[in-house]
Length: 302
Image (cartoon, rainbow, N blue to C red; front, side):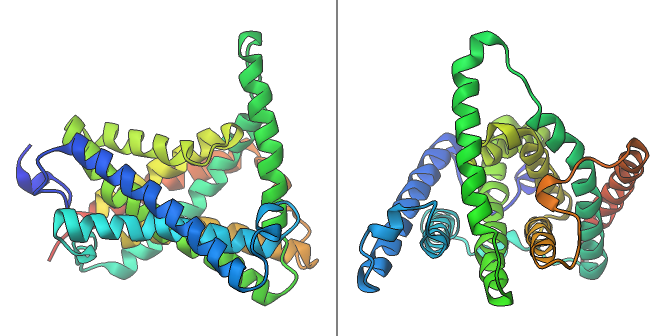
């Protein structure tokens, strides 16, 4: 593997395993720092611990906690890693390209078509029945799913446009920037250095991305989504496009929930079933066509 084939910004790094350990350590410290910031915020606003710990009864503390934790772990920690240990700026992850508009439109349409296809995997994953020897794990997974579902329902209950805006910021923009910066911008190139195989690098980073959410009954669709983001980054060499894809996936879901909650649309996205097979097949075809377009256009450089 020649140096020019290694995705930026890790061409100077001689120890991929050391990079992973260092990066993981910074992420943990960033998450702890984010939790500390959230605690300080509620200490000085007159709620030093009560609402912060009643996570199923207080939406605002949850949003603040998620925002600060995700910002510390997924944005601040990677930026520190880039600046201090790689000595390169974040601009190295955003290579210039002559076809921004075409790539952005292709990315949005690819993501939309993939979201339709992914409804089948969501439905399949939710219906998985594990063998009896995994009954203990299945019980834990079901309890975890129920808890996460209650938290998700609380956080995605929007009573106003301001609430929707806050939700998009915390659950759309921050995760899109932070998780793509960490998993696609840093972890994926490090894994590429380790494996010398981009497909393994994308697959493993997508696995880690999905596993981080601790949701067994949503693991497969999130894994596939992470792989899509990984290939988008690999094809374009520009982190802007997987960020766009990630933001669009999250924000469209939140917007559809908001519209349903206010009676503007009748379909509840949280209870959405997979469309008929012909629709899945059509969207799968679109995914292949748009992915091919993105790959070909992404290879063009100045």
